[in-house]
Length: 151
Image 1: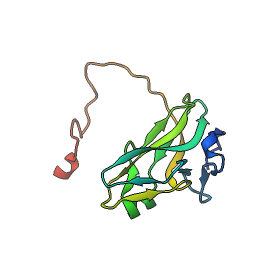
Image 2: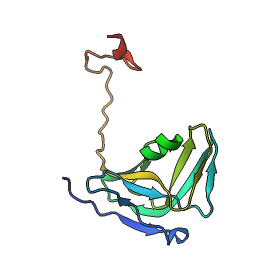
Image 3: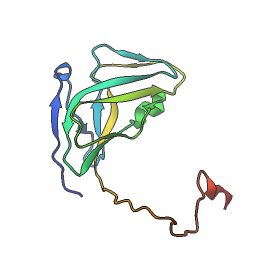
């Protein structure tokens, strides 16, 4: 098991009554984020909306927050995140918000405090880019977009 990372959390004034993100099982990778909406949100098929979570984070340098969909919402209602995974940089201090989209065929009612996404804290490696005229040759080469289906 990896070491715990301390992340400071600030609750926004409109979310004082909501729980902090938490892990729903001992070995869960992600913490659930709740909808900090003032009123219920009706998400029609094909529609997307920005949903506040009511928290801001201070993620340590060398880490990021990844915001991911919840599988239960996806399976039951076709709800997912439009930009998944969403990235929360270590220097961002604003409220975490998620862009939910309804790919289902029925409207979905999202209630205050409903778990709408997951937050995973992940170590980040910085790449040192080096410009070259030619890349090393591999078996795959430039094959992409389903190229292994042709092999």
